Length: 267
Ligand code: ATP
Image 1 (cartoon, rainbow, N blue to C red):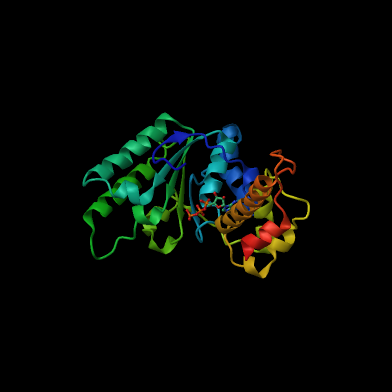
Image 2: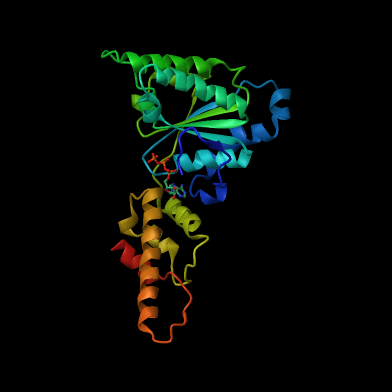
């Protein structure tokens, strides 16, 4: 559920995220551990990033990661969809940016997640879109108030980092850039494991052979989620068809998703 501007602690856990172990370590160090144990960081008087940009191809876990960080830190999560914030009535967008940060201050510790940041903070060009420029300036000034921003972490997400105005990516703003790539075979296996962990999967399903199957090359996490979903639909359909054709009316076989269901989903 992606309700804009709604804040709550998300229920995504790190165990729901596959393939991104080193990113997890980094974000734990920079965000969740810092929220949970501020004393170490304060004692050293560290000047550390509080703004991050997750970039990379679609469907590889940017939103998922941001939510897992918030859950781990037990921090509120404010979801902002870039294009929506910008498309408010003239003058409204700047007000929305101010209101957003005001609300973040009232529910800190919190994470503001800017999805599709390229739409909210596009590179200033020669065409001079005045509304976009005012919104961008408002955003930059809110990002800069580091005292006011205590306990507020910012995570932006984009597939197009080159389209974002470089001023947004300076130190003190979204200064730390983190790439989330398409998974390789090992990554796909890890993602398939997390996606199937709580499903009734038969022992005849070999996730490794699915992960390294030629047909899975180049698939994103979202594609793999669609594949698992499809295999489950095929398995459920098969069970429904066989149980309605039996006259006893009793549910004899338990619902299990088999290797053949994955084969059909893949074909
Ligand atoms: P977009 O750029 O399109 O917004 P995104 O990178 O934010 O995509 P998510 O929304 O996090 O991608 O992922 C979409 C879905 O794909 C997730 O809800 C999850 O089911 C699955 N998924 C993607 N990446 C992973 C991953 N690394 N581990 C487990 N599931 C994943």
